[in-house]
Image (tube, rainbow, N blue to C red; front, side):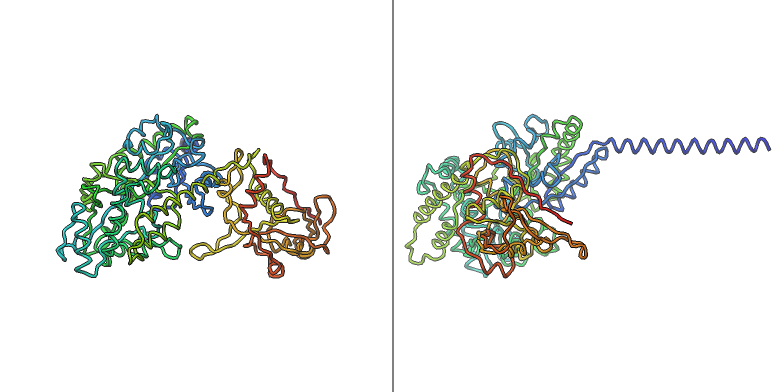
Length: 627
């Protein structure tokens, strides 16, 4: 009996020991997990990128990698100014940022991101890319994915019709003419038809004169306003575009300005797949789509030819860039973890994996990789291996006047009265106008003493609206408006807050989310209180402090009065002037009283800032609540 009791006690002690050990192990595991270095990676909303990053998490299980999908779209027209503020206001700047908005033009790029020029992994990126993105010898981001654009042709269709794939400009020009004369098939199509004439002109100039060093230099001088378009070498470009129009490869609808009614960015491969076009000037993503679909046709990619590029060139079409937060790089633990991640991303294994999950044609570090499994890309291997890839320099801000002039020259010039010189003179005029507008945008209006919150900025805008229209009050509501595809979006009039430092018109256009004309209204105090009722609207009001009274029966507040700046009560029988955006929803009773002005929201704020030597945050009055 005694032995049995000892055995039982021994067994119980053993169980307790095991349980304690398990608890200890669990505690150690939880401790180990909690001690993981956390690295946040933000990326644009692309499923393929997310798939790659998920695999990256699996590779570094000893790190706590958190993925944040932040899809930035600027509705203000100034993505550069808004991008970093957008990231910061949506959870702060991530440790690693992946986004196509990363560029040399970002104003706060050098303050927000670390200099990667001294990192060993940066040396793996091909020098041609590094030269393009350096700022005074420093690198604040690296290319992540690279896609090229060239000629995709239907090899099966070519064999059926007996057409030979072009190998130089002469055979390319002859092929376009042959297809146009002997079939109902469109010789060539460009998937970028949603872009304006400016895109076509930039691209074809690069393929012709722009590939020459002198052409690039001349283009920079033109953009700077020191060289006339009449002095540019553009003869081949005009001839090249005329060839496309004469053969039906380029039609008038292709050059129309994008209105948002049609989404055409994936149209090229659909037209090719339907056999409506023999070739397409399209990116490698379209080629992948075609090659991965169940199709009886075979598609191959070739470079595009012009008189000045006998070997044929590819156009670099799109880039996703990657950057490291400066703050994260200054944290030793985070910096070590980030270096491991970046080292893997730029390694052969990491780049190979990236090509498998992305639409990128080639690695920015190693060129095309594993070509045996990507036969459809072999047609462009010589161009890639020889470096015949162009990132077209831009003719900046040519404007709608060029669209109209170029359209008329190509498609409405039966008498031949419109000459290339007319188009070039229009370019000069458009360039001069854009330079003047750019200088006005960059003009320093005032300085901001301290970064303002969004509410302070909205109140400042209201004050500017009131003062510039001579109104007693100004309101800034939340607004609803139709975006380009017809859906309803909820929007405030401000994208973000005002940053401390110098303030230009460009900055103001960067923060105003939806610019619109101002209107004024002659209304009574009673109408104003009814408009600003707590239950019906959410308005930022300038000119008075509102008083709300609690209704116990309905458990809500009602606007019952307002205090004027001098401390007196709002006179409900008196008529006041109210300023508001033309898009503000003020109700039918007040809307019929509208008087148009010639000022936009941005105009009012710009004019107000010009009058102020320095802007200090304005104290936004708190509403008075009474129970």
